[in-house]
Image (cartoon, rainbow, N blue to C red; front, side):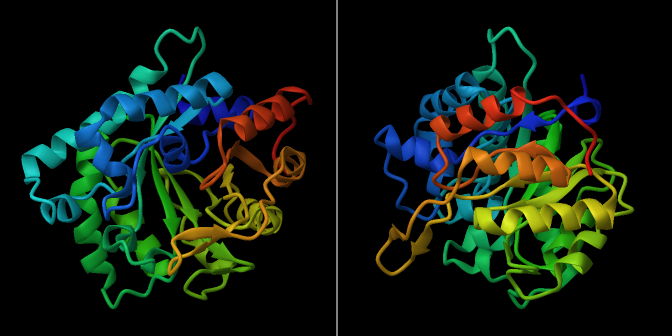
Length: 303
C-alpha cells in the first residue's frame, strides 16, 4: 500500500532517534559525518538500529542519510560514485531491516538541511547566506539519488527556515516520490524566526507533499504546531519531537530533563497528526509506548 493511502486509513508510527540508538550500541558518532559515517564503516549497525525500532512497533523507518551529502562525503575523501552507492544503501538497509516482520512497513529517505552538512549547529539557525537557487542546487542531486533507490517517501526534515523549504519544494518536483516537509521550530516560529503559519503555507498547494509538520523540537511545542499545520495546509501532519533535552554544543552533552511522553500522543493525534514518532534521544522503549498508545484507541479523522 502506498504510504499516502495508509495515512488515509489510520495514523502510522515513526521510529525514534537513529543516532542515540547507534550510540547505545557503542558506536562513536563524534565526527562531522555523524551517523552517515556508519553507512561506509558499519552498515550492519544501521540495519540493526532500524530493526530495533521496527520490533518496538515503528511502521516507518527514517534512513541514515540525514547528514549524507555529496559535499560532506567529498570532504572525507569519498567520491561521487561511492557517495551515490551509500545513499542508495541507506534506503536498502532500512528496507532490509523490515524483512520478515509479517506486517507492512515503509521507508522514509532522510534529507537533512544544508546546515547538517556543515556540522556546526547552523541547521538549527538557518539563514546560511545562500539563495533559494543555491540551496536547490545543493539538495537536488542527493534527492535524485535517494528517489532512484525507491523509498516510499522523502523526509525533508529539520528544516530551519522558509528559504530552505522553498528550495526543497522545488527540488522534489518531478522525482516521482512523495515527500513530507518537517520544520524545526521554536514556539510558533521557524528556527530562523519566520511565522510558522507562513512556513506551512508554502507546502499547501504542492502535490508532491503528502504531510507537513515538525520534528526535533521540544515536545511541549508540538501540539500547537500540529494543529496549525493541519489548519493551514489541510494535509496530514507529521510530528516527531526530540526528548526535550537541550544539546550543549560546547560541552558536547545533553542538558535538562526529558519531556517526551506517550501521554502526549493523544493530543497530537487529535490535533491532526498522522505520522507520529520521536527524534533525538527518543529510543525504542518510547516508540513502543507510542505504538501502544496509538493502537489502544479507535482511529478518527484528523481534526
